[in-house]
Length: 238
Image (tube, rainbow, N blue to C red; front, side, top):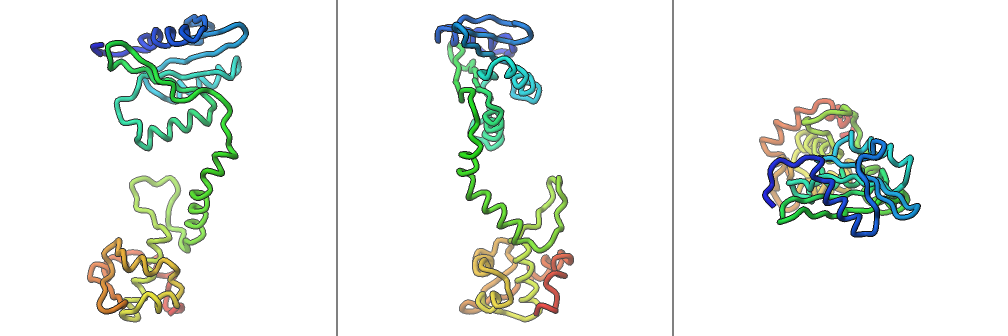
């Protein structure tokens, strides 16, 4: 099928044919619903849009007053369906308990893909599956000593617990001289001390002997750019 500009109306026929093949009777534009299909007393509704957007989600959510079986149908995105943004959008649709249909116009004739059916979202199951991520979130929040980040910031480096520990280690090496990870840990630099030194993510550290580390010139310059963090590890802790 040669693909020119696709309109919402182009989505209708593939949706109509699919649900008719499943035994449904299908009508379009019924009381503001794009597509209505039914078998006996079983009713489903499909809302059509070229792209997934907030307007479509609001429309579909309103249709749930009539039936729990509400789908949204969009043109299959040209970008990869493995991208995080797309996966996050699919998760949102699923949480709203809406079905999702993709219509592709790439072949000789349109084809559809049911990404998921409408139905209840199991929040408890989702929470169980996300336990590791939840524990990681709590640990990161608890491990931070500073409160330098501003909520809602974008394109601004975040001060993480890892960054705080790197600054702490750099401060101690600068003021106490070369040390081992073991001795640094005695100053409460934490369990990640060896990994921070060994992986050297910021190129701040260098090994100068067996298990002994010092600051690079870059490290000496850059760690001092965080005075608000350095205050947390002042000389009173040395």
